[in-house]
Amino acid sequence: MIFSTISDLRTHLLPLRISQKIGFVPTMGALHAGHLALVEEALRQNEIVVVSIFVNPIQFNNPEDLAKYPRTLENDATLLYQISDKILIFAPNEKEMYAQKTQIAFQFGALEQVMEGKFRKGHFSGVATVVSRLFHIVMPDNAYFGQKDWQQCCVIKQMVDDLMFPLQLHFLPTLREITGLAMSSRNTRLSAQARTDAKCVYEGLLLVKNYILNNIGKENHILEKGQETGLNFYKSTKFEVEYLEIYQKFSLIPMPSKDYMTDIPMGVCVAGYMEGVRLIDNIMV
Image 1 (tube, rainbow, N blue to C red):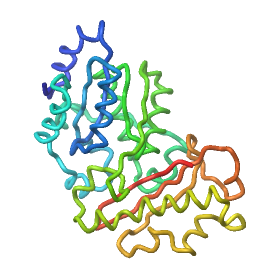
Image 2 (spheres, rainbow, N blue to C red; image 1 turned 45 degrees about the horizontal axis):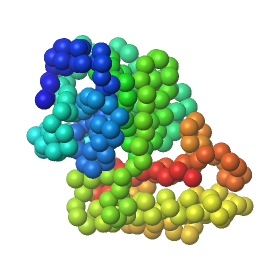
Image 3 (spheres, one colour; image 1 turned 30 degrees about the horizontal axis):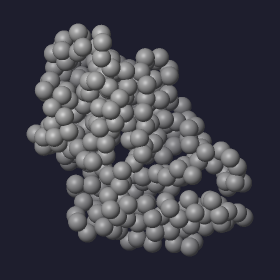
């Protein structure tokens, strides 16, 4: 069942939520196996699962990227109903979600001043705005996100804590293509050759993780060491690196090299462009 208006979805859910748990998977459509894994996990833990499909304009700072973002609602619905015909799809248009121009802007301090936040001004305010609205509309017991967008996960967790949403967040591991490329709706814009070449992204992350775990480059910064020795994404002439960061897993505070051998959970995050398509990925240490 597909709902395009907030009122219709709320009316349908109202009597159901009394005795049944509601799981929620927010997406921008162009669904892939990573999205479907989130949906399947939601089905295991809840009696009702709502999947939203909405390309949120206010989280894009590049109009061309917004225009090119794939929109495949009919195919998305087919994929979801192959899993279960009980899934509820919420597919509003922009006017429905933003009947009035939002006057609220979210600020997340240090969480949004690095990595994606540094290169995409206003991005996380746009993400938080739409996710908070979707949470108010669906009122789920559980919500599911993929770890590929780890910074986004941290921001959403902060928003849920700050606004005291009565729900449980679930962050599931990144699913990858056979080459190691993190699954993403944007991958559909890559040529077959680029999808193969993009394996350099994950391979490079694995090398950085190996450097950290084996204390390689202790005397100089591991990222500099990696560039000197030719990490895969730096060796590639087709992947243009925008940033590569080693950070504390939950605070996203950059990690100085002297702290690499501590017990502080860390992550390595990279972003860049392949054939003009922006790719992001991360790995936990």
